[in-house]
Length: 99
Ligand SMILES: [Zn+2]
Image (cartoon, rainbow, N blue to C red; front, top):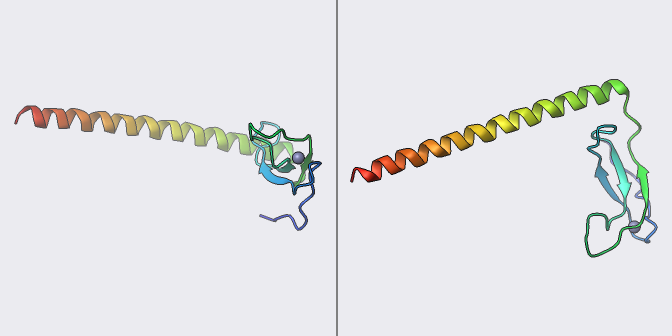
């Protein structure tokens, strides 16, 4: 992944922060934004500039498909973990109730 050689200055006078977009229109596309963005105590300015070139419609489609698959797998793993935890609790309770 190529990194920026020059970090643009934000309207606040601080270097801008490189972040990644996860919107449906620009999944994985990096952009520069205000460093204060996301902080509740400091007001961010409206600085915004794309770093990566725009994605082709085909790459957007592939990326969104992969993200959807990843979320499905993560959900399945969470469910599986919950089931094993429940089994562990039941086995523990059964073991100690016999003592
Ligand atoms: Zn700023």
